[in-house]
Length: 148
Image (cartoon, rainbow, N blue to C red; front, side, top):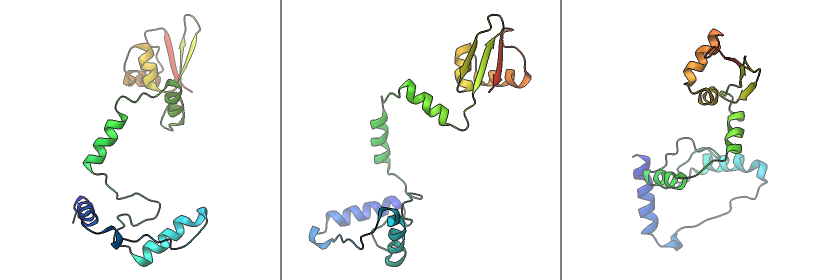
């Protein structure tokens, strides 16, 4: 049985069953730093019928329904990320390459957080920027581009 079928089955079961036939119990009081360990203990030993996830604190294997995915898309539609947030996200990205561009005619230098930002600044593609960095050639015979 697929997860979607299981979810629908449980939803129908819950909706068609009297609420007083369900119970919620506190199994044990524990400190926040041991809650995952204790939850895993109960998942392993009691094997609760209604639990979809089998590993405490881990959503691995869980698949959102198409309906939920649509709700998430609709929520994010039109959401704008500030330039400051974009800069922080780019700086935190380990794959992001710090790049410096130097105009050899004026001596001006410009620092960027990614190849794409350099490409946007120079009006070209990020793959072209990558080629110029690898070859060590001047872009448009004016700009020296190198990784920091």
